[in-house]
Length: 444
Image 1 (cartoon, rainbow, N blue to C red):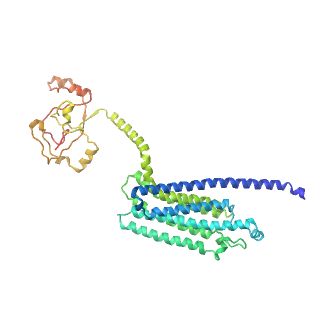
Image 2 (image 1 turned 30 degrees about the horizontal axis):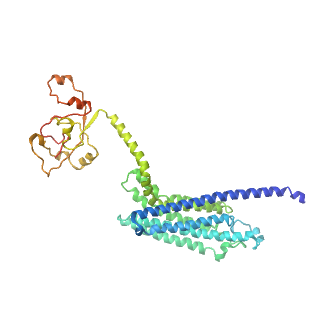
Image 3 (image 1 turned 30 degrees about the vertical axis):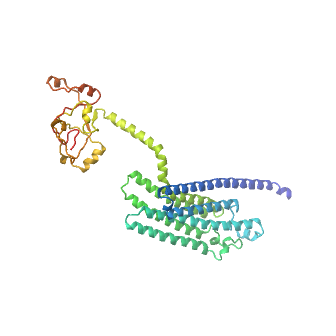
């Protein structure tokens, strides 16, 4: 008989060794991921605090600036507990056992003690998870109070309703966690079977209450800033960017749903997988809570890099536009006497082809052009404009036209220095009488 059992022993040992090796590899991967995410979360929170202190000073910090540190503290606690599920409890708790296994497991065995410790870790994990997420939600509500300051009172009322919903949901999840299983020590009881409600790793009552309260509060928090941003007059790109920024709670909801699905579908190994997704869920919650405060300072730091690139792209675009309109020449843009430095006085003929730059377009929107009065050239009649007049400088674009030989034959006056100016793309104008309001470079 011993010889018949010998072949099975190496196979069983090999299978156990392979399972242990796979578990060790999974544990190592989770350890690296969990502590890396925690480090990133702490760094982002530090950046948020730095940005706030730089903006308002240390004494100007508000309640949300302290609540995020409450959340980060319990995030570190939760990460430590999630690590302990695999490192200390080996993924075991008072679940995943048949009645026969429970009856035969000795209270003095190492597995029995490990399962008790694992059950207590799971219970502590739910508690830290509660404080972590709800402190971050409260931080967002306080931030929304500052964000909507000075707006309609309806926004403030919605925020107060949010605080009421947050307090009620927090009380609900804590009462459900600590009062659902009676007596309380059944949460770590091995034998007899305490029932699904008293198995903290896979308790359906705990899972669904937490999920419902989490989803309801997150969706309500998203409903506060998104309608305000949607109705704003921001540019579409910036508007949708801010909506995505403040809708980060949707990722938290997705992680929470996935976590619950893992636990329900795999009661044996789902608890350990759920611990991994709990860490990811809370990491996303920490980032999305701090991102509205961190984003401005990151934008300032990245502006020298991407700003220069954007400026270069715009310059190239302007050059392309100018090349496409090479038949146009712009004249003006200096002082009202700049024509004296350009080779000649203004022409007596009015210019009909004029274009306004951006600043002039804004002025045109406010001032009707037909209401503008003309001005008299002081060098022509000696009059000097009074100090009460308004001076207006207009850039004009002149379409260059080739001089016809018939024009010269007709005896039309030729302006001295005109060839040189035309050679360089400039145009000299003869001095004329009092200009009309649509004429080239005017003032009034």
